[in-house]
Length: 403
Image 1 (cartoon, rainbow, N blue to C red):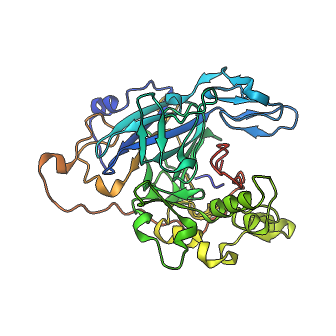
Image 2 (tube, helix red, strand yellow):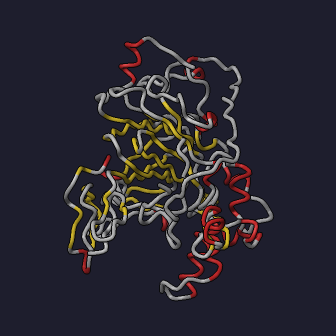
């Protein structure tokens, strides 16, 4: 994976950045017409000593114990879930929180070198027992001790959702991206808070601390060239709320054909970019078959569709060269801070620094001027370092991400 205004007085900037100088923050804001709940998983990576394999927060290790760096209240490993993930740094926001429709905001604080993933979801209901059930089953996250879906996911990830990823301070740089590799449900952008970052020296400049993701809602753009029966996911009322990727479709079909057994087929290998369908680098180096969406069946070629409407995001597993962004801290005491926006097309023009608690918009003070979208250059071909391979059945379930 490749490394990659508005100005206010210093006092106002300090008000906008409530956490200590030793921390990063991500402010999540919802401008969708419906509630959005955010699932978040992350922490320090852990290297398993026996084979040097890298594991992210809340993952189960080969010995059926849990990654020791993060405490994950809803995760357990081993036969009968006998090994609870109860040690390490507390999971950010216990793994989930709710953003109310149109104006909901929430700020999460992360320590230096935190790496994590977050997904939005909608069409979910909180019942009187505290259970939080979504219309799409793969967007539920369940606590191991009672098996019920929760708002605070406690370390579990979800699938069939747009994915955001941020990797702080690796090699003195952050890397971040928005991905539809697992599927798409809600438009998302990731951007930097002015005054908290330094883009100097990062090449190419169009990837240096610029906005990732896209404000376009793909749900309403589903093309006739794709199979709605295979790819569209609907809520209880029959309204489409998510589009699953070719990999997610092939994986689910494969599991169904094999009664849940881990037996791969050619379609799953191809659309999930599993050996021999490697990256461009593997193809050149080892003579493997290159993972190329042009080879996929056209009725499930979500990579082409996603990339057309979502040019600044991942459309399939090895879509690195136009999808990953890089930034670095302003200095040793001022760490990068981010804004993640859901349904950004609805936000309107900002009148104060993004990330401030006031978060005032032109529309809130009666100005009806049309909003001019902020132009973001579409990245062009760049050689990218290798990334962690996307998992084949439920790409979000083990939180491995792209990093």
